Image (cartoon, rainbow, N blue to C red; front, top):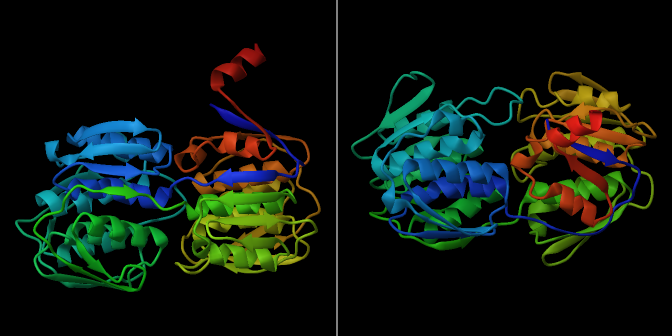
Length: 427
């Protein structure tokens, strides 16, 4: 398997440009299905999940034209099937967004249960509840396929039992063509929810309240093609901010929306890092030792669960004892055993982790357990004494564009070794 080889203890200095948001683009690409003509999507991150979403659109029959690494034109008018192939759906969690999009546009969807990172039970009951509330018939699962159909979706009031990003997105996608008004209460408020709503409105939808806990969607007769640019990636930005702290470096993170980073910034500052905000960039530097703090993950605008493994790395090297409360997912501490290999002192009890800071992490062979846990291993390796090898890097490359090149650009000693190169070296 391919792997990263990282020689640590090198303070990182320089500038990193942030790519388009993974969590936004994996919702916006399925949303293109709803248009009646060509959509041009710009500032797409060049990551594995985007490639998979485009493969799904191609399999459905859409006409796709790559303009460059970050821009694509998609003509959904040529779609001929409403069934997503198994082999593609298993590659990414967000493949389930094609249910809402296909159901909304064609009144029928057959989509396999999704794949992606495995860090806990992530049921889609709230998604299916939403589709049923809009008048769709959701069939019992057969051969791993979720199938729903309707003659006409009708607007309704839907209260989500939890502020689920996935359910909010899927209901929005289905509801844009529903008759009348749909109201989603206890809706998720993440920046990528707002970005999806802005894209749909650019195509002609009537969506109000995105970014609040009540979203109102008035159904329209048709949506048109549009040109749209994806927002910057909040979690990628937070990861490079954490890299500056982990290595006691000085990094300017460009092409960001500082307001989206407020919860991350607040915790880094509480730990003793310095953060300077500008219009579209933030500078993070950490000349001295870091302090312990407590972290509780929460839906937006709280501290994001997708930054929990990365901040755990920082806390493992901070002075004192910290407590992490993971309130979003059940099993997101699977990476802790990997950090322990590097000398971290972390005890996990259910959704709580107690982190006792150590003075130095030590290099060790580790693996990425999922996307964000993989990013955490990279941060730990950058800070550790010695040379660390990270395996299962395909998880990392699902969500981080050119991570090796970007880290090299700020002084990291990191290289990507292919399986062929590793075998040749052993021989």
